[in-house]
Image 1 (cartoon, one colour):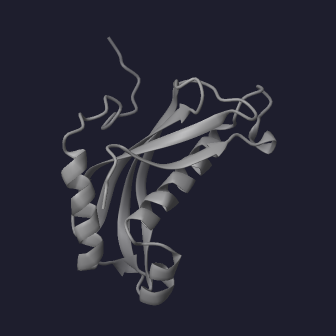
Image 2 (spheres, helix red, strand yellow; image 1 turned 180 degrees about the vertical axis):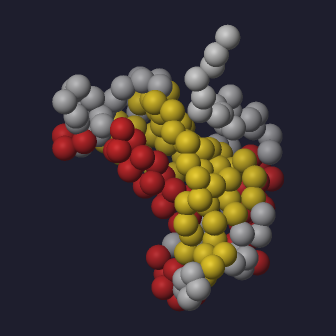
Length: 160
């Protein structure tokens, strides 16, 4: 299995109904695009729709942090790159960057912590060994990448 560093698993185009009164993509739709990229990541790791239906396991987002760096407009192509930062038996910590698909500029970032969940609880549950093996393979490749400067940021008003 070849693993990109970072993973490029989602590409799309900004839809007309995502545009707000300022003439650019509304903040909610940046999150939607990142959510599509998360779905692609989970599929890549083996936690796809069949996995969820057959096992009763899923994932929940525990925390997310989004930065908005440059506006996107109707019909702009986008590419999302995802880097695994860390994991344990029950959680995935990853970082995604959204780029303009043609011009290449950074439009937004997100840092996400996911929890693997047994829906019968619902409660946190360890990922099965075959999923953890795929996660470890990704982590082995992504360890070479530098940590994104936006990762781990805290929202605060800086006072002098």
